[in-house]
Image 1: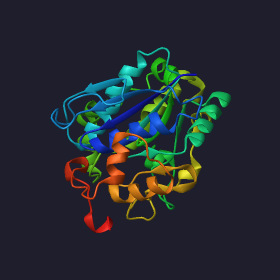
Image 2 (image 1 turned 60 degrees about the vertical axis):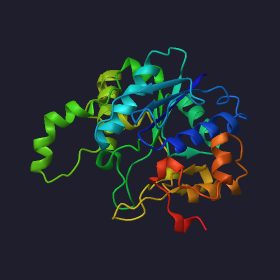
Image 3 (image 1 turned 180 degrees about the vertical axis):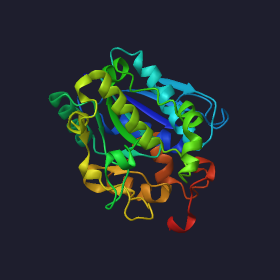
Length: 284
């Protein structure tokens, strides 16, 4: 098997760099993951990120507004991978979602392969609301069967066309946003229905091909939708502040790569992501 990784971001450029460091220098003990192909889908200012770092492919695109922007970045990256017939599975990651346990990732992919599962994800919910059909699929970390996704048109998400078509209805129902995670689940159902005509209207068939990462659920810790940021047992870090992540990297002896070295050894973190996420009171 050959694995692709799609990292997507607008302005979390130092998060993206460290994400690549982790993949290249700390997944190397995994036979499955040690030669993974990285694509970086980026729609920020060119001056913020002038040249490639460790990615095989840097995909630049125009920035759109927040929710559409995330969907567009995923679409751009998956368009690249859809043409890579050598790639079996793609791990889609938001730049600030770091995976430090390669064994866990490998185990998920091997289970997908063994049991004919096309997507691995978890619900974007909380303890009271945690059904995929209600809250959608987490898109900050999702694994997809690349060849299946290309054949049955899991992507593109086409957020803009969906928004233009249904925004009035969402406004009428007093919904403030069109949720990327729910749109992802919608596109999955459509792809499954193309794959298996008998799945139309069948809840069991729709869920038969998903690996749900129960170890990560619930994503949110309360009904205010405040997120859990660290899953120690499976090595997932999603903190927005570099201060919190620095402690975890240090505790896990993760030190290789220029981005990691800079984070671990800098007294002043104002450089990080152009200063957008630094919380000085957490860096003592």
